[in-house]
Image (cartoon, rainbow, N blue to C red; front, side):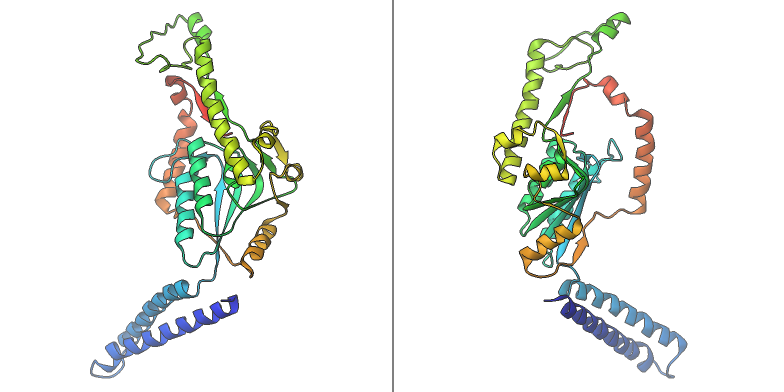
Length: 330
């Protein structure tokens, strides 16, 4: 159904809703009561008409949706929080919420295609993979379009799309994994701080900043990073139809869009219009895009403001009492 037909259909449904609402309200509040029309009766008729108009609007949205393509955004550092718990960093994207919106779009009978807008330096491994899986499982053509940055975990997601569009000077790539730990053993010794080791399991405290790193600890932690990297390479190679050697040859570098295009990391250079043009070619008609985003009520916004203040005050406390080891896609 073309856009004009949908608009006409919506207008018809809305008009029928108003007419039925007025008829019902007139019968209940003007015709039935004795004494003829009153101001209160007329107001009740208008209220009934408004209620039926709202119901008709919901029905029109279902039957004659003004969109056929869903757009979801992945912006900022990618993290697990989906709104059910307090994020450690208020800038982090709630990956669970992104997955929810992709799945909601997939279940929406009006949605034929998916556009993923990416502006992210990457983030945590498993949340990035959760979003990638949701994109991969979407039933319909998918396109990723990069605004400023699509690096590491962001590119992990983009590689699951059928088509990737970037700006000429977008930063794309960083197909690698970073692991780090702080070694403060020498400082602790200078300060007279002793580390008493009580562990069950030889590598339970591998990477603890208060003791010297052993060679077997280093091999163990590097092995974890290598395993995640191999998984990253395999997923991107599969999604982009490239060889693992081509992905490794990027050496986890970030490329501007035109260089990323030469390496087949992106398919096209352009703006959102280029992404929509790709979907129009796949669907065979013009697309109407609707952004799917999680609800953000006033309490959510207040909570994120409070979390931001708390994070600014105590961001380093967790690292001070933990083992200091991190592995992520940034």
